[in-house]
Length: 338
Image (cartoon, rainbow, N blue to C red; front, side):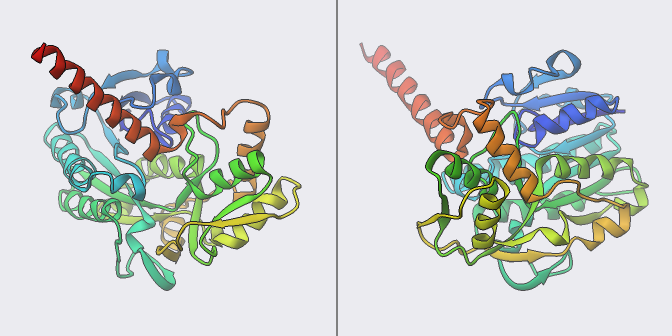
């Protein structure tokens, strides 16, 4: 089976492409590679690499593709607010374009990477039937993409949306703007955990490899079980209060708990249920936040990860790319004027 992964060079995508290769799939890794192609260097000679943009690519690359995992996006809530229109253009309209073209080119399966952030702020446990409450452009774009891609589902084109919990753990395209990862970083660097506000907010979590495995589980499941469906991706025992999570990160690494509050309280807070994906397709997670905290901390300690790598904080790297682009335009303009 040939699988095209948009966002294949990203935090989730780079590991997902590697997992697909290991399982014997023919993989097309599609990405803009804003964070570098070196993130997939271990599998570069075993995948087809397409450097392109979901908004503009030639649809011919979909010829012969059996399944699409659509992960390409301006990732996370903060980055999504840099340019709300651009976020909607890529995360919403770009994904609808991918799905529409995939269907037209005979692709059989399409899996959308959505997010539990669509729940926003809610009391109690939320599941796939709960009312959504997207509070950011990123979350709104995910929900819009869900709606319009799911409408494309048919007996010949299976569409599934995966609402992923907050992801954590080591990846070649590392991110230190995710709760558990940045907690492990601050513990390593400063000897204490940085907690947003009072840390009273709740969030569900899932390991980066586990969430990737959910995509594979979907395309390997019977089509009638997943076609037109939305699934939360995670596990019921990984809903955490942020303050308690900070304690766990310290404990996991044998450190005394010490923290510092910073910033305004996070207005997103929700706990999610994951019974549906478990009951319908037998999906289970294999990693815990404790595992992820140790994994990231040890990678820092062993110099596998650079705590100062500017590419590990997505919004900051996007800002730098925008500044570089603006400087280049200024140089070009000055050149014309001179």
